[in-house]
Amino acid sequence: MFDYLLLQDGGKTLIHSQNGRGLTPLQLAAFEGNVVVFQHLIQKKRKIQSTFGPPVTTMMYDMSEIDSWEDQPSVLEIIVSSNKSQAHKILNISPVKELLEKKWNSIGRPYTWFLASVYVLYMICFSLCCANRPLMPREENITHLRDITLYVKKPLKESYLTYSDHLRLVGEVISVIGALILLLSELIDISRNGLKYFISHTFWRNQFSIIKISYSCLILVILVLRLTDSEEIYPMAVALVLGWCYTMYFAHGFQMLGPLTIIIRKMAASDLLKFCWLMAVVVCGYSLALYVSFQTVDPQAFGAFFPYTMSLISTYWLFSNILNAPANYTIDSPVMYSPIYGSFCVLAFLLMFNLLIAMMGDTQGAMTKRKEELWKAEISGATVKMEQIFPKCLRFGSKSNEQDLEERRYICVEERKWHSYHLYEVRGLSSDDESDEDMPPQKSQERNPGLDSQEAIRTVTVDGTEDRAKVDQNDNAVWQEEIYEL
View (cartoon, rainbow, N blue to C red):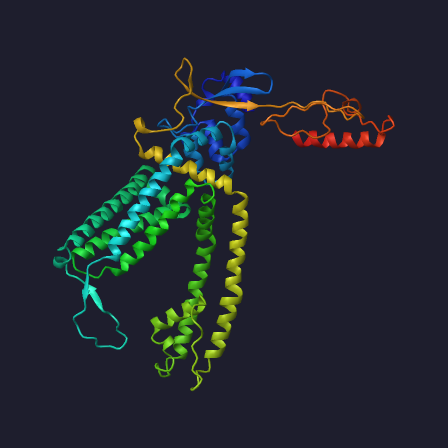
């Protein structure tokens, strides 16, 4: 139907027309993940450059709507922003496949490795500054037996006096500058795509953006606490955890580690998040029940469930199997303790944890089948993001290999089509088979569709007579192979 409309239109305006969202037919097919329509339309944008015999043909594909070099939305950007899994399959279609490989292998992978090296050095610098933060011996007397504090933070005036303090100050300045760069990069991305797109797309599908923003904000909070002589250990500890966890973002530069981080993110965003909601409800209910049960007894005998904050923490530890159930066999425990803890064990250990393991197993199995496809979508998104950050004069990618009179940019792709040959199995005769690296392995018996099935493949027995049963069997096998190829 679309070809008929193109014939009526002359193929001049309809194929380049845009809908209300500013998408051409080719871009709309990429957004919807319609592989058949996209491949049909892309064939109309190609030209034959050269032919090396029947098997090899060099095709030139127009990159005007596919590459992200221009300012208008490209197919790569649309595939990255699409929520449909079918859109990722377009990354395996020529010329999108060759374009992505060229972009990633030329600059994308080395650039990612360089950023990973710089970020690891930055985190080492920040970690050394945290490990050597200004401390001094405690001067106050210990007033409680549970208080084991020996050192306290130095005042701001005494924190930068020696040479080692000045060296640490340089590392702290680098840490603050790095956090500002990370925060500004995310703010620029939010301003470019909009807050609605960030919340609906990036917030749920790319948890590394959340980690980056949280880490940058915590560094600024530590800076304020340092200047105001306040306690900074809590945001510092969280910032160390988030900062080192963000190094997993650069794993997409490795084909072996990239799919693993994608599976971890999918599990965290789907299975683990649902499990945490259920766990919060169960822990809240059982912590209240245990607190009420131990509210009338001596707290020194069972201190794990009094006050309520301690009961909440103890119930979470019990749920995570970190803490064993508190027991004091010298006294009588409350009557409701045994049934409450018994039902808690059945619900938490037997049901919920096994449910989490089963859910993660299903997710891991489904993601493993699509790991290469998801990894290509990941590197495609990273490539598009790099091109958005860099100015046009410094961008990399598919700058024209060939140009025609209209100054259009093309990418060259070699297409190989191998034709089937007659293979005869005759007693006492053999042929020299020529092998090619790109030639797919041929089966011992093939059929040429242009000939009759009885003449294409003939099997000769040892005594020279034709075996009719083998001929029919071979014909059936060839027909099945042709149906599979069609």
